[in-house]
Image 1 (tube, one colour):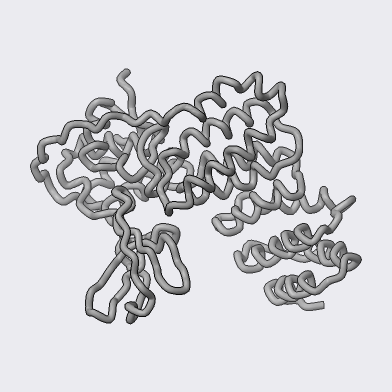
Image 2: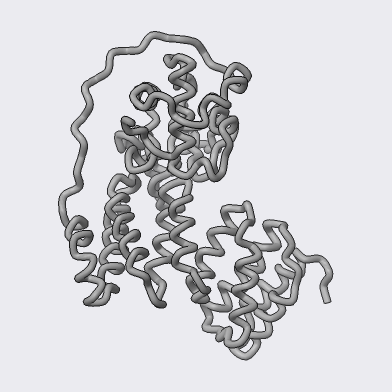
Length: 363
């Protein structure tokens, strides 16, 4: 038997792809008998073996509890790719507590792509539902109206919504009638705020300057000042925070579960130091010498539609024949210097608000 965990997992992955119906249970049992450890590639290969076996109709039977135990053991794995596979497998294997687990993942999701992935899995759940869980999904569909993306995104979201509502029982429809009615009502768009006067430059803050003061940012001291700071730094133009903001960038509502105050401050001050691959831009060098940078919104054999500004929805179509070279841009779409017009007290209240995961209300 192969001793190297990665080679073993890859061999099982190859086996499940060519296995007969009778052999698939043996493949699953071989995965369960192996040691996945914490290595991301080993874990992903093992989980994908299970996914393929399930997609091809394997009956877990008496092995289901062992599969569920494996999923539980991997629950704290730091890899986002692993967590995505776990979401799919909990639903596909009807694991105990699967719906509530995926809803928790939904609330912790860093951005709209991860949220949509969780919902796409949830609407395939064919087991029992609790009414609060149904209500939370309906609320999410209403919240997701602020999502941005290609021209197909609204149609896809509407199809997911319709499929979910169609799955409700008559009794559930009665209980959830007010929430369902809100789905059909026009989205409420807040009136544009009057243009604020330009704020004066205060200073170019550095992480070393802020670290000694971070202990004062464990809670918001002045809600009005925090809201002013969030507006001045334009945080809610790209990020959701609690019930407000936009879903262009990662959702900050649950960022406290993943990062401490120092890391939050660093990500604001040095946005290009670490860029989530989901939000990477691409730089296209054209034959004409022009350079275009943005996110690929639509890709076909003949052209690429590049999203230049997610907030305004501006795009540019580039024929593939015009592209001389392309490479990932190391620069974050999030600009630097967002805190430069804030005082120290405003910076600390802003960080406290982000840590709290909500726009502060007056006390």
